Image 1 (cartoon, rainbow, N blue to C red):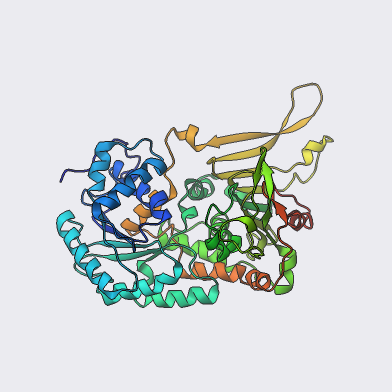
Image 2: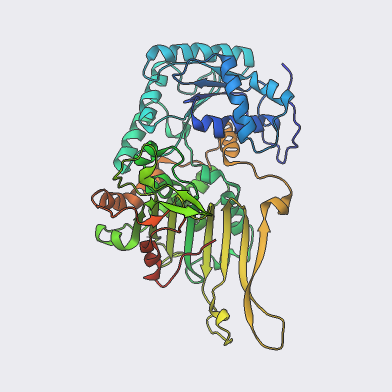
Length: 506
């Protein structure tokens, strides 16, 4: 067995240890679109051990070769590192294996154990196994229990065993706690990796560098100089054939409870004493625990639900959510959610954090917009001088940072205009930013949980959105209340206007 090739140069010398990755739900969309393309790219960069192996599982009966044949076009379509190189694929695919079975069948786990033993011997994985649950959350507890019963959990002399679970982790606070009890009967907290791919995005990680490596910004990063923060995740697509899934989740659970609150915690956290997992996650957790609890009577003023109806963009007619496949014709599920949060600590006292996420908006854009206080005394009569300074951290599709400040227009009069100082990752460094799953999979294999969420963080997020979920569950909405291709319901604009602000439109 030859060492895997390295056509793409290493930027940092990080390599995963010998291990096998077991993917439950390997015939699903996540495996095709994200997991296997990410693993192929890591192999291409020589970041995986020469004997690295993937063991895919699902109910679908496939041989090893059939599984490999299905993954090749997936990598060709979704890999972000350019065309698939035949020689690289051939070596990588020799480490792809498949074992069909039903998650409820104890005999399946016996076969899984035997297969992992064979792979460990053939690929020299050292018996190290990372289990990845790309399944419905309702399966997390039962699968963990079956792994424990089959002797596939726990650190032993034969190697380490760790568990990665996808979001959502529960449907509410009580459900998240029950699920944690089930999983932790088998895997201790230190061996559980709750993945939130937003934390793996390059620009989200760069918030730490931007704040704590630059002396000019951190002194201004508080309630004395910042007036409001907006965090937006806008999607131009609809539910994209996942209507049945979305009917069970909705925008608040899908985006705000996890992704956007974790981004908010990264923006608002204190500097960790050291840049390691324990200290970094402690500081994020402190922010999440400091979110001011919403009273039920406040929800109508501080949170807005929306659902898109039929609309049009660029001459094309777009279906409303209720016309999508798998959606109830009188659905009360929100495809848009906006909420105001306050962080009750000295740094952020009184600063509103406005979070919004929605589908079928005019464009795809995820960004953080930080609005600074105006100058304490306006010397200039030009109305433009009243526009605040703005710092925008772009997460997707364009990764970068933009700082807007005032400058004098050329001429004999004192006229001002906001200008931008821009940094873009692509042009700034000349290399591609690794997709989030590459970073997160590598971290899990190395045993670094810094970019994963802890149980206390998950519970704090559910506590933050819990009152909104309770009120919305007992509210009859007049949906749809925004047209596909628009920026959301009018009530969302009023949410900010009551505080004297407006949404920033990218």
